[in-house]
Image (cartoon, rainbow, N blue to C red; front, side, top):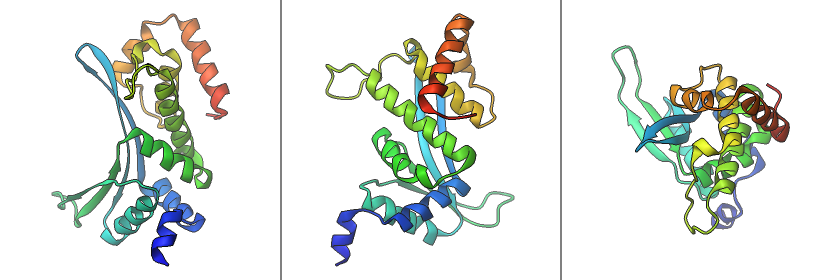
Length: 192
């Protein structure tokens, strides 16, 4: 009986529980760096907890979705009193799948971050070279809509746009960037 339940995926109760956990203790990360003179994007969804049982339950629910997060243990720091555990997902298809499942249960800034992350992933996959079997990603600098989505993501986080992204955005005429940013907002239906 348990095996049949696992094959069918997580229940809506489990997804609601996981989304609440991500809404409270999750981190949606989309960062840029220069590598080999090209702009690269690193993304991840991370859940941090001091209770390993919570991480185990989250890992079980994710496993029902075919998602296997990397689990890391961190010893208490100089000011920390407890060991912490991280469950981290960095595969784009898994992040997109997770966001699609939990986003309806989320609220506020984390929901906006989740929507923007999924939109960025979907856009980057769509922008990739269709003749390649493996995701190529194309050149981020040439995909103005992806850059606009990333800028919106950082605006939601109330952080400055990363220096590498700001340099690329500054190369575009202000009018073009404003149009792309407006298109990103309209296409996503996210009010920020």
